[in-house]
Length: 331
Image 1 (tube, helix red, strand yellow):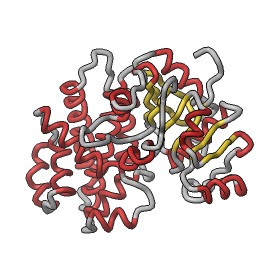
Image 2 (cartoon, helix red, strand yellow):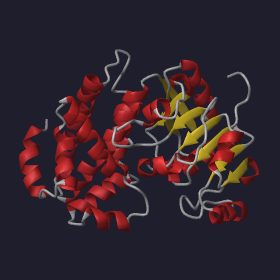
Image 3 (cartoon, helix red, strand yellow):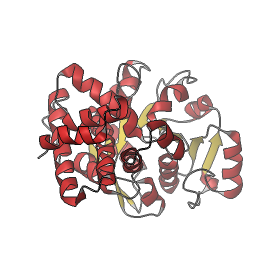
Image 4 (tube, one colour):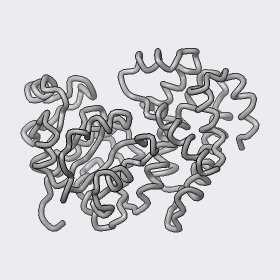
């Protein structure tokens, strides 16, 4: 990968917009697939995303926008996918080929009945070689990137050269990158932390206090580490690093965490359907709960916190009954 690579982004939500902003800092041209043509017209005219991070001024001189995903793929060497996991399969269905391309996932969830991580889907279904796949993870919120607060991205690939190249493309004056090789582990951790944030939101709505929250997040971290070591052992994994512990902390405590908002509304008595209808953004943790619960059950791994959230969201068990049963399992 010696030549200057061309980058493209698929998706137009908050995180996709933030990534586009970063890439325009480091690349003279960035391709951007935006699904609706009226959004493209708005962005070109007003230099802003009409739906997300509207305060962010975009350098449209560096952007080539298209509503044709195959056009974007054909023009780019590196395609960054940044759509909610629940929409991922529909979004990529029109893609004719990813041959010779690098696929970068900035998606925080799993897909399909097989409960694939995104990297597994690229490799097993779309035929992208593992050394042409990278994963972007946090701890990073789109809102703070848009405000140019100093932020950190983790770039993981089984090929350190790929991780280094992608890292360089996302390193700018307000973003620093950390490189790693634990692709699957980071993807699972990214999915799990959203489930734990929902648990925190539910408990917040019951005003259980900071003491309980500290124990809950500590237990969530321990549960995550035990799961990762059981399902995807990696002697080089350091769970206390940013992609694991750091991303868990920011998602469970940040004012920008949509999964905390989702959990808080569930805790206040809103149904899943009404909560989703009132939120302008997708709470990935709702879908991640089902995926992670199914994976853990199939592998015979205990995940009490994820199980508790699953029972509330998918089995309609009363929250007070769940808290009574699972609270003693913490610590």
